[in-house]
Image 1: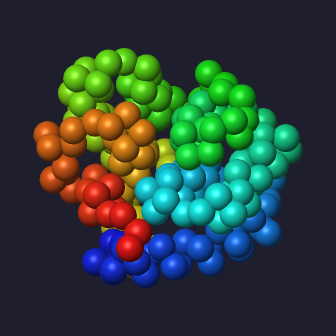
Image 2: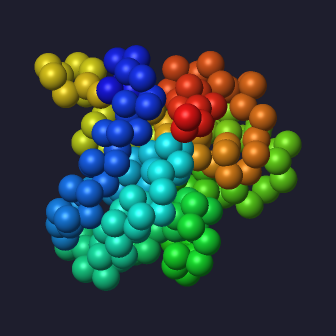
Length: 182
C-alpha cells in the first residue's frame, strides 16, 4: 500500500490488523526479512504497545524455537523493540545476517558520524540483500511491493538523525519517517 502511494493512515490501519494475524501465525520457518519489516513498521507507525506486543512475542518465539540452524537472537530486532518498548528483552550483540551489520554498528557511533554512515548504508542497501527472497522482485510478475529500507528510517528516528542528506534516496521511506498519527 505504501509503495503505491497509499495514505499512511491506511497503512497504519492495515498494520493493526496484520499484527493480529502475525501474532497468531508464528511459524518456526519464519523469514527474518518479514520480522524486520514488522518490527520496523510498528516503530515507524508508532502503534500502541497492545498492537506491538504480539510482534514482540513472535520474535521471542523465533528466538526460542526457530527451525533455522543459524538462528540467534538478533541485535537489530531487539534494538528496535527495546527502543519502542524499553525492557522488552535483553540486547544481544549477534546478528542473524551480516547484511545488517553496518546499520547496527552505526547505532553505536556519534550522531554526525551516523548521519554520514547512514547515507552510505542506504546507497548499498539493495545490493546487501542480493540473497534475500525479495531481491529483484520488480522483475517478476505480481510480486513487487517496493524496496524500502525501513530499518534506516527507524534508526534515524531512534537516534534523532538529520536525514536531509539521504531523505530523497529512492529506498528511504521518508514520508513514513516524517509521518505522525493524527
